[in-house]
Each structure stands twice: as C-alpha cells, then as structure tokens.
Amino acid sequence: MATGQKLMKAIRVHEFGGPEVLKLQSDVVIPVPKDRQVLIKVYACGVNPVETYIRSGTYSRKPALPYTPGSDVAGLIESVGDHVSTFKKGDRVFSTHTVSGGYAEYALANDHTVHTLPEDLDFKQGAAIGIPYFTAYRALLHSAHGKAGESVLVHGASGGVGLATCQIARAYGLTVLGTAGTEEGQKIVLENGAHEVFNHRELHYIDKIQKSLGGKGVDVIIEMLANVNLSNDLKLLSSGGRVIIVGSRGPIEINPRDIMAKESSIIGVSLFSSTKEEFRHYAKALQDGIKAGWLKPVIGSQYPLEKVAQAHENIIHGSGTLGKMILLLR
Image (cartoon, rainbow, N blue to C red; front, side, top):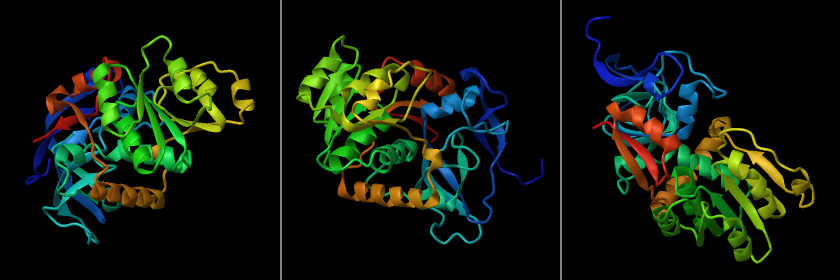
C-alpha cells in the first residue's frame, strides 16, 4: 500500500453467497475522484432488495469481485475530480449510482448520477430517493404511461418503491389503491397517497379490490412480487390494462387467455436500462416533487454498517416492509 493513502470502513464482498459474505473491513483505501467524478462523505445509504440478489450471485448483472454494494447514498461532497463544475466540497447531495459502492464511509460517483439534496430532507431521506423513486417514476410514467384519471394498484405499497409510487401517482392525478400485509403498513400507505388500501394477507382481498373498482378493472398495476401475484393481477386489469413488474423472486404459471381477452400487457422494468437522458428527466421531475412537498421518503428500519448482514436478511425475510431500509454511516 502506498504511503499517504487514507483508509475507511467499508463492506466488501469477496464471494457470492448469503448475507454472511458481507464483510466489514477498516483498511479500505478511500478512492480519489477522476475526471467528472465526485467523492461523497456518506452519512446514510439505502438498502435495496436488488442488492441482495446481486450479492447472492443470482442477478443478471454480476460485479467483479471483490466489490462494495450500494448505490443510494446521501452525504456531503468531500472532493471533486477534473471538469466537475456542478458541485463543490461541502455540498449536500444524494446519488442514484456509485462507482465504488455505497456501503462505505466514502463513495465515488460519476457527477451525472449525483443530485443536490434540498435542505427540506435529511440525509436518511436523501438515501431513500435513488432506486425507489427513480424506479417508481420509470414504472408508472415511462413504462405504464400512467395518466391523470386512471387507476393504479400498487402491490406491496408499504415498501420503499411502493410508497414512492403512491406519492407519485397521487401527485399526477391517478386514483391510487395499495396493498400491505400489516395494519401499520396499511396506515402508512394511506398517509402517503393511496385512496384505499387492502390487506394482501386476507383470503378474499382480491374480491374486495374488484368490488372497490365497481367491476371496471384497474388500469395499471405496479407489481413488486410477480411470482406470487401475477396471475391474479391479470384478472384485475381493465381492458388495455398494464401490469408493470418491478420485482419477482421466482417463476409463476399464468393463463395467456387472461391477457388476450382484455388486450392487456405485462411489462418488465429495470432502472438500469434507463438512458442518461431519461435519468435527467426523472431527476428533474423528482426534484420538482421535493420542492412541491409531495416527495417525502418514509424511513423504515435503520442499521449501523456492522449490522448489514442482518439488514440483508430482514429486507427479504422480514414480516412486512415499512418504508425505506437505511444504513447509517455517521
């Protein structure tokens, strides 16, 4: 190791596997920003389900080993590389992607993936914007082409992406229905934009949704767990309705006739497929949402860096997600 290099604490993954492969190291070199890069002093980092799939080695994208997980950080600009004019040391920011990984005291990011964090939001809320809100915006407005006057059902509405979708949908004039598995979850969903909420653990909750819709069907379904819900989703759709798949943890059998009769669509969403221009568009719309006051991330479980394995365990196997899971770095 070269003399003069500063070190930090960071989570490193040396092999794909269960949560136990997440190793806390205190001898990781703090990266130095290159051209059009910034170094962020991380105060909080969001934990997303996709990071558990990547860590396990089952996701379509596999980073080179060893690596540090995490993309959604919030903190202060520590230093900037060449040709960075948008930010300076001390600026409050959040990111939608990192180069070096967000589960760390410092994170390197390309400047176009970093955005100003308004004073209205704290660092925990800043770390909850990235993947959840950008995914929700892409799913509802880019992929589903949702518009005012339409109805949307958010399946799994009490988690980070779900609550983000409810807030965006309500702000854009859609009728918002949500599902959650606990009483507390249902309450949070109603407080964040949903007109009605249903308990997806109840035996006949699908019937209740259909009754609420007056037999018309729902225009858009944002689906967080397609391997469980997709077959029922297709029956709930209106003519020309769209199911947008944000998350799935395995296969499911469906009847294509449920799609044919209504000429409905099943559309998959991957935030990583967005272009730079699309990211800029989403960022502008979401920044406007912060200023208007409707974009307000709800923070759920919070963990110190050394408890990250527990966080990964709980985000997949927990009894019910409430808000955005966060790692606290400072």
